[in-house]
Structures are given as structure tokens and as C-alpha cells.
Image (cartoon, rainbow, N blue to C red; front, side, top):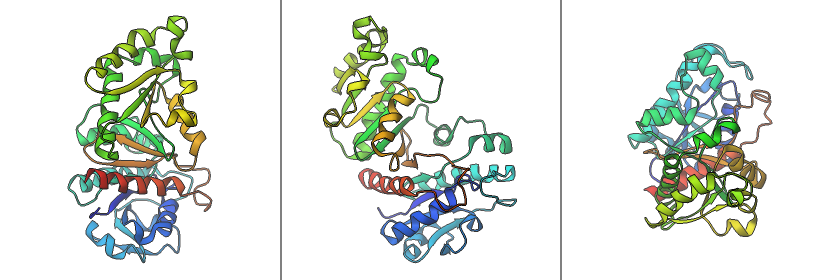
Length: 322
């Protein structure tokens, strides 16, 4: 990895600034990255090196956190988002995308944003980070992967009420989710022939139609079609038998049908080290698997583990892709 990683500041009133400082203190020069944001938002006493371009980061990151400064208007109060910060938060994300797409940064790691603050302060019209990144990249469907040392899992449907999942789970959505995951494992994780396990939607994977017909009418036909294209797919498998230790040895990633079916096992296995990865973008993007934690912002008690793992995984993916 020749270029450094870019870390966006996220919501300044959240735990992003203190996590950036603690992640740098943990990694120092072992993993060059730079922060895009306002230097004054970092905790007092953080060693800072102001840089004018990403190529300066590697030379200074052993002694200080490299910061590519971005102007923010208004005061900062930890735990209380300032509406005047909203547009700058959005602009920092766009700036990070531009740097990684130009090759000046090897990958993009994003600190958490506060969607309500962005909507109220700048009319942010996207459901979240991922959709905004997809728009900046000019791509349609992307896939959210949650990863830790023992598991990679992808939810086919994400942030929606459980009652809406069956209607949203279309054959096209499922096929594209599988295809994007398969391609991402090859390109970004160096797995030549990915093995995917596909969960059922219903208890016992529908039990032959007695507990639901989505497995019969939607999931199984998609899997049959993709197997003829050379995909190594197991399923639909009852989700309650998909995530124990022996089962996890049989696949490289699992495709879940809805949000909690995917996130509960990851957070149970390794709550502090889970990483959010966006597959299907023309660049690498990772993020810690937590939010802005406004309730503890500025108190110095937030754990940087997930951000550190997100930076490490971004570097690993950049090496695989490069």
C-alpha cells in the first residue's frame, strides 16, 4: 500500500474526533492514515501535523496525527450536534471520495455521521452514508458487509421494518446481493472461489412451505440459477444453524435476509471489533460498526477498537485490490 488511508471526521460532536486521536496513538506509523477535518475538533493535547496533501502523511504519522484541514463554521460542543457543521461533514465525505478515486488515498474509512443532524442542518436527502457514497460513485446497488475475525455476513435488506422485508426481498435484489458479495470477496479479500451460505427468511428455512414460501418461490430459484453460472452456494439454510463455530468454517460469507439476522451474530461474536464494509463501490470503504455515541462524546471513554479494525481492514483490502 503506497498511498495512505483517508479517514473522514464524521459528526464532530460525536466520538469521531477522540477515536481518530486514539487510533493514531495505537497505530502510529505502522499504518499511515490521515484525518480530513478540523484540527481544533481533536482532543486537547493530540499531536497534530497539518498536511497540504495526502502524500505528506507517511512522513509525519509516526510522530503526529496527519490532518488535512477542512473548515467548519460554529462552535463545537461534544454531545450536541451543531447545524452549522452539517454541510462541512457532507463536504468532507465528498472530499475523501475524490481523494481515493484519484489514487491519492488507498482507501476510505469513515467515522460515524449523525443523519438527523445532516438532514436538519443541510437537507441531507440520503438514508445514510452508504447511499451517499453510492451516489458520489455513480453506482446503483451496493452491499453492506459486516466483518469480524470469525465471520463475514451481508444482509440482503437493511434498514426497514421487519413487516416490509418479504415484499422487498425480490429475486433481482437477492441475485445482485450475491453477485456483488461474490465479486467483492474475489477482488478485495483475495478469495479465488468464494463459498457463500444463504440463509432462509423463515424459521427452519420455511420447512417445505409450512412456515412460509419465500424460500421456495424466491430464494431457491435464484440459487439454482446462479449455481449453473459457477457460484458455490449453500442454502437456503435455517438461520439458527448457520452461525455456530463448525458452520462458519464451511463458507467465506453468509447472506442474511434482513438486518438483525445478519448483525446479531457479528455483534455477539465480536462486539468491539466489527467493521462495516461497503461492497460494489469503485473504491474501498470501511467504517466502524457503531454510531456517533453522543451520550459519551468528549468523556474519553469511547473504545477505538472498531475504528482501528476498520483502518486495518481497509489496508488489507487495498493490498488485495492493488
